[in-house]
Length: 465
Image (spheres, rainbow, N blue to C red):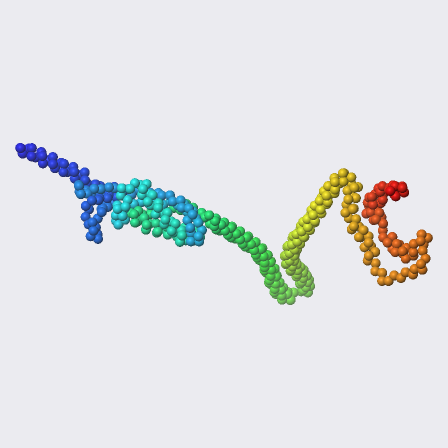
């Protein structure tokens, strides 16, 4: 075998070795975990490791004694429609939610994933995680009240994340996100809490608006009061300033006149007369000015009194209107009460008369359509009461003592005097026919004896038979 042949064989062997080496050198993508299993050395506690996990980088896989697989780090969205979960208050709630989980890249948890999830499909991993999520979610709800679950969502989600994450780590998963879409309970307790909160918010808003309206009305009234006070004060200061100016002018004029009089003292008599006349005219003008000033002060005082009187008048008018409104409301309430009372009485009377009319209609129908016979039936039903009322007409007469001297004499028909006396007392009762006439009715013929058929006399012979 020549040297060339040997070189070619060595080169071929080297190519095969390099190709094998390159085929066993594996790079790990960022979205996967490279799991090397087989003879991978000893673990941290001295025992044999079942697998070696690598996230990122590359590793040479020793042929024959080692092999590899990948774990996918793609997040998995799991929908959990939990129903009839029992809360701490023994109220069953429905908590539909969605969890996002994925295989963890922490060293110890990756080892759990390699031991428990390697070789499982995405769907199998989701089903395994779903069982854990259902159980832990029920456990968290059982430790919390409905108010906490509904109002303090952060605490609820924190408890869920804490419990779920601990259990998921045992199989190599980690919790990325929890989203609770809605919480419902079979007794509608949460809905009642929402309505209560909404009603409270509406009432608070109404109270705030009422307070702001009240503050605005008070502020407007205070502004009007301040305006009146400031205007009155300004008018008073103006009058005072005018008075002080007049006093200053008068003093200046008096000083000037005094000096002129002093200068004119040595003038002629005519000049003195003219000065006296001028002084008189000045006094007259000053008097008129004082009169005008007094009139202005009086007008100012009257204006102030009028403003005050108008304010009191407005207060009285407002109070009277409020009292009138109160009286109107009370009168309306009383009128409504009387109206409904009378209406109820009218309805009751109408019902009674309607029932009586219906009964009489049935009675007429039973009498074959004859109203007189129907009335006779009614009178026959009430005849005992009518006779009783007639007897009571003399029943109340208090006769202490009645002495009848019966001499034994009899009337023309042979009736004793005492019998005639008693018969006269009974005849003092009003006849039944007169009673009906006073009531605007006619006594039925059967009671008057008009409808009575004559009794035929029976011959004596037939009677003996």
